[in-house]
View 1 (cartoon, rainbow, N blue to C red):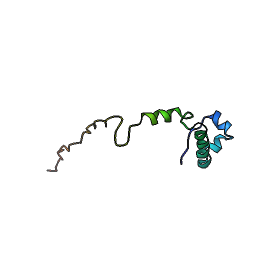
View 2: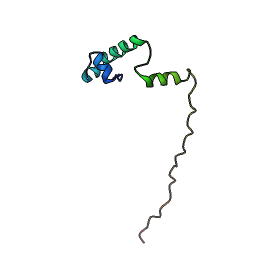
View 3: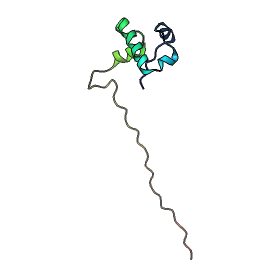
Length: 84
């Protein structure tokens, strides 16, 4: 399910309710109306920051982290008592 977060203030101006906002079709159409109004990410400042800071295709914003070695348990022989 896709859900685009819309502030309560904007939700009210769009004629929506929290329940309506959970309907994927209504939610996407409402987000599209917000987008068409300004043609930018003003209603979603974190999206714009992520969009503007995203690397061009084929590059990475940060290098991949160095893998942390995971210790592998080594079997230790345990003496088993025998009956004499």
